[in-house]
Image 1 (tube, rainbow, N blue to C red):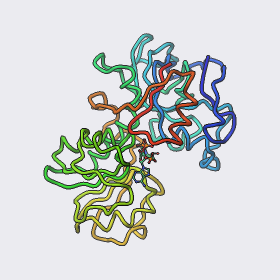
Image 2 (image 1 turned 120 degrees about the horizontal axis):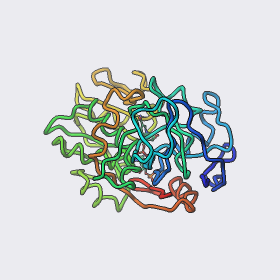
Image 3 (image 1 turned 120 degrees about the vertical axis):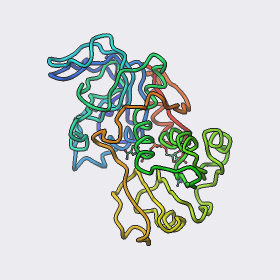
Image 4 (image 1 turned 180 degrees about the vertical axis):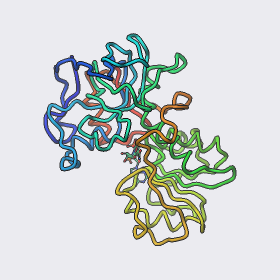
Length: 314
Ligand SMILES: NC(=O)c1ccc[n+]([C@@H]2O[C@H](COP(=O)([O-])OP(=O)(O)OC[C@H]3O[C@@H](n4cnc5c(N)ncnc54)[C@H](OP(=O)(O)O)[C@@H]3O)[C@@H](O)[C@H]2O)c1
């Protein structure tokens, strides 16, 4: 089968489309014929080798975590899915098992014609007919994260929020949820992003280096490393909340405040809802590419400003 592989640790320019064996499902696993897959920052970070000490990859490494597709074969003991079922979800490379929680959602890589997944995980679900395969492939990681942020931050009507990294996959999925919650949002963006960010739910758009609005109730950091949040922390009102989805994990000494909540939002076990409700979200899709152009899409994702998600159709 055709798959996008990293032949060794390296940058996206080293990725290539290759012919690799179709993976076989083991006990408790599904083989899915992939219809569409989407790109996430992790698809670049993992092959770059930054986690090689904790979780070494074997090569060729097939890329891709998010997917929509059709169940093609099931391993022994799988009762929740049948061949022919339409499914979608999110899974991480098997090498990152240690980062995959108690009910691991693991994959052989979704930027491929076929991929293997664990069946018993909260991060894979049946795809409702109302959701297209392209939207379903765009949504899992960003939808799970946006919903986890809302479940943790519990935004209240009339509150004010600063969203840093609003232009990304997570940000563009989160903005409509904040608007729905009645929150007045200041979103970061580049020149030219204004119209789209306002359409998604931002009341105001500022540049990355502009002054942040003072006295906000909530800061949601979707992009800056957690140890670079000192400036963001200063604009929270006393008692405000600062949530981040990036690493390193928050430590009190990273900010000069002891009167705010400062937490990482990371849901490895689906306790914040799993795929429930993800199908109801609306992704922002920047572009779709056929599998043969996936390396071009990955390179573009690394080098160019992308507002929303890139989807690969297989
Ligand atoms: N905790 C979790 O469960 C979880 C889940 C999903 C993702 N994540 C992590 O969350 C981060 C965001 O994910 P994503 O899928 O939304 O990524 P993404 O699509 O790459 O979005 C990041 C956005 O932030 C923008 N940006 C870059 N530098 C900025 C700055 N200084 N100020 C404001 N915006 C800036 C980027 O635009 P440019 O083009 O200008 O760079 C891009 O539009 C990634 O690090 C990802 O690994 C964590």
